[in-house]
Image (tube, rainbow, N blue to C red; front, side):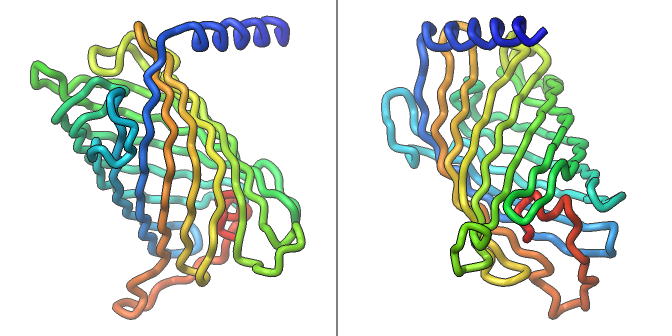
Length: 261
């Protein structure tokens, strides 16, 4: 079995390296706002946009290709488990990897996050997500596309490496995407691999910012896509606590594996 997996991976690498590839540079920007309802329930809203280069212009700020709004509900069932769901609206101006222009997308998802390993030096989380996507086609109807995502993420507090600033951390993750075949997203079942490395800084218990580099490999019929993306993410917990007295959750192990140290 291991031999078969290694051979499959070797053939995949060879196919990607030998195919024609479009290189894209992108900037991802996202802001998350959360509110604790109880020790088990958390609400979240986030918004963001993506700007991208084109095959003819390497500038990552060439144009905005996508912006979105999402609403989440999180349920902390156990110390190591978190279950989540979201509903979202995406506006796709020009998404190079989808060959999609001026199209809407409505997306819902179910997600489970599990704290696999905890120590003073590193926290490791596993995450699985099922997405139900409805994307507008050139014929102006909404096509359904299902997608499965599997991620492993490791977070390392810099204080464990001798750094005096205790509220800084570094993280790394890898995520595999699989999808159903469709007119909009193409005939491939394997959608992409996304590897990411970055660092985060907590200004306070409720405000943190992350900066990261992401590399995406997307095998496509005819021309593969390779994305180099830089991401800036702001997270604001209970930011409007002066309006309504919030409930303050005690962080679980699964939170620590996402950078909430």
